[in-house]
Length: 319
Ligand code: CTP
Image 1 (tube, rainbow, N blue to C red):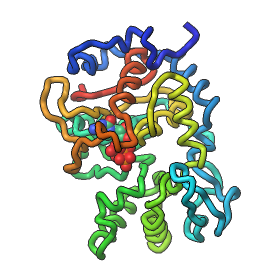
Image 2 (cartoon, helix red, strand yellow):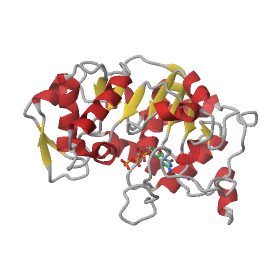
Image 3 (tube, rainbow, N blue to C red):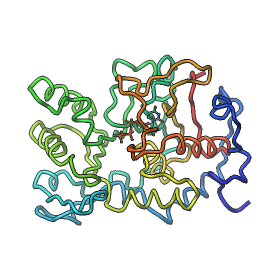
């Protein structure tokens, strides 16, 4: 068929079964999964009608100047001014310009990664994307070390670095930034008010300590464009999660996409408890009405794409 079925009821891949654990079941092992290159290319083309990852991955220097006023994407009534530091850190050209990779890994932060032994497999991919500055050193066996792009929602500074209240936390963040060693640090700075100071602190640290990272600040239209793509495909997300954003961007420059650490459920396929994050004690909150994310819905769409061969989801142990 000409259309990509991501979440339509006509797709046999998303037939609803009453038993939750069966519903989310993913066939273990890579032997059964085959990539559908035609479908992957069709998805890339479709997404390109909504956004272009090469451009939308970051605002460029030429398009803003210090003092410019930006309306936050989710809080249109609130504004921020482009600071000198932010301006300095805007890239001159897209960090993804002309970049193409045979295989990419997108590493989500679910506790399903613990004891997966997926680290070495993740590190074999040509381009590895991680989310929200998640720690790697202590978890290398399960999550790997290679990092080509890592995201940083401003809220991470509060949640994982105590809002830099003292020198110890500042040093911790600085060490984490230094460890990125030339990779892309992707900071959604224009999404929601409230992150302004945190973004500024990070920008200042990077400049003051000459941290070797390539900063990127997603375009103002990215969020709506990504949402538009998924809505058009009947995936009714409220606000795309970082993981879904990364998949959507990766379709542009990755031939094969492998997802690890995507599992927004408190029990695994064998009914064992799963931590929300592999590295902290954050609890499952996505089911609350207040949460802007609809992770189980996203997961269903990703699972359907897995079953059609457009991406590969790993939710258990690596072979
Ligand atoms: N993820 C998942 N299952 C979990 C936790 C995370 O599938 N139990 C995926 C989601 O796609 C998520 C990504 O991993 O976006 C990274 O996790 P996290 O840092 O929690 O991201 P967000 O929830 O998007 O971040 P925030 O809460 O700051 O919006």
